[in-house]
Length: 67
Image (cartoon, rainbow, N blue to C red; front, side, top):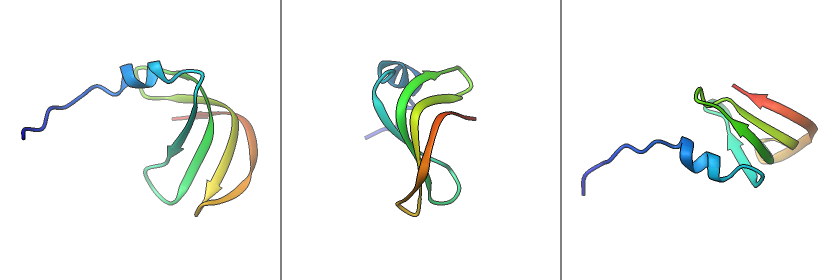
């Protein structure tokens, strides 16, 4: 079985207006919210966002931009 690289942007475009969970590259931080937009640099905009650190909710953030 050969590895075939795939562009994730089309998949993310299909998920706009759906609930998603974004886990950051470093640490145990996750953001759960409704995907509003994603651009060619993989900047992600979420609304109704809640932050989780080590699987524990730290509160509601509203609208966020993850760069």
